[in-house]
Image 1 (cartoon, rainbow, N blue to C red):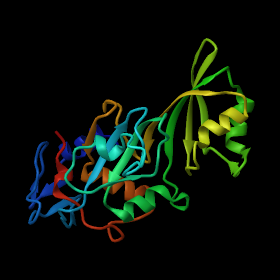
Image 2 (image 1 turned 180 degrees about the horizontal axis):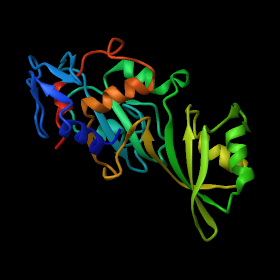
Image 3 (image 1 turned 120 degrees about the vertical axis):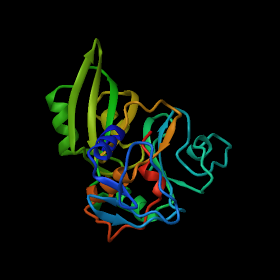
Length: 240
């Protein structure tokens, strides 16, 4: 679910605040507003925070680092104590969720809930169909078999190839190790989507709050419903 798609749902009149159809830029009273999507009320809780960060290369995907390197927590500007959902290697880039909602973090990261993560990988050489099949069938690594859910070629640039790879789990440096094993070194790796959430306009190092619609979509992607979810901040309606 992109930010634009969330805005379209608001434009379509599917979101309301205190019984009034929401418009772009609305934000409800964080303590008392009644927010609803398609007429279904969503309780409001002020302390839950959901941030989407476009992690730059070199930033560490932890809450703190004993070596004093810059972390994703250092990059985002938020008063609440938030944690990264899953990890991106220091030399990888792209989207990472930051939240204090432990339920959502577990749903997004645990493979059994099936929330896919989409990556683009710029690799050396010109991998063909046999390499793509191997990625999906499974590549033997030192810590077990690693598999992609999907893999396809996006573009070929001389002696380099741009791949799109969809993963359902997240072993350490998994995509890089898979492709190294198959003879294609990764020179750049970017996560472009987390389940239904993507944002091609978010610049490296920039972050923004998720909308309520996006949080709802993440729960749905994991097979959960609002009955399984904690209540959400009213600011999630804001879409400007």
